[in-house]
Image 1 (cartoon, helix red, strand yellow):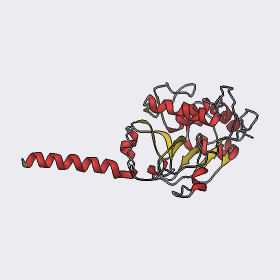
Image 2 (cartoon, one colour):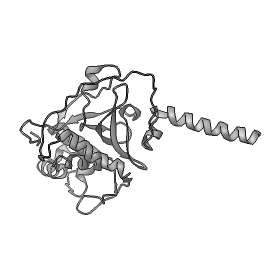
Image 3 (tube, helix red, strand yellow):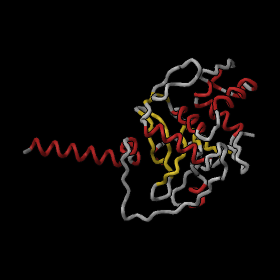
Image 4 (tube, one colour):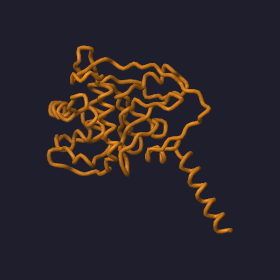
Length: 237
């Protein structure tokens, strides 16, 4: 009887820990979410820009999210390695691979854009050490950060629960960069929690997942949106 009580206590403690640790990030990584059923649902303004670069009738921002979410659906294995040609196999990658794969959903080749800019402005990219390497440069977080700072629309890095205007600044397809602690990157999802907090699609060990942005506790270094236009093009200025 005592042994059974101990086992049940450990099980309950484990469940509670999974729910409360970093806002439930463990369960979210496994695709399990829990929200207070009695809490009101906050409606956040949709500020999606109508731009359809690939002509599929879907806004580019949502194409980016859909392409990134494939990583979650496939549970792409987190694996950091160097690859000839730059691109890793489809079933593996790191956080930065979520970014370029997501952008490809809107026919945006981040590798091509970054390779061109790095070749012309290598001093602006900290992880090149002055020697461009197209096989890896576009997959390094500080380099993506440098590129986005130079060419994308820079947005708020504050996430303020309960502030509808602030929450509306976080829109699907946005890119978020973390540099304090472990370098990391993710794409803002079209999914929100009941309190309006956006989810983020990212890849960190063991595999790609979709979690509440607030569950990732590192300070946000950068929040960006590709410079979309209403004409259906979405290339950086």
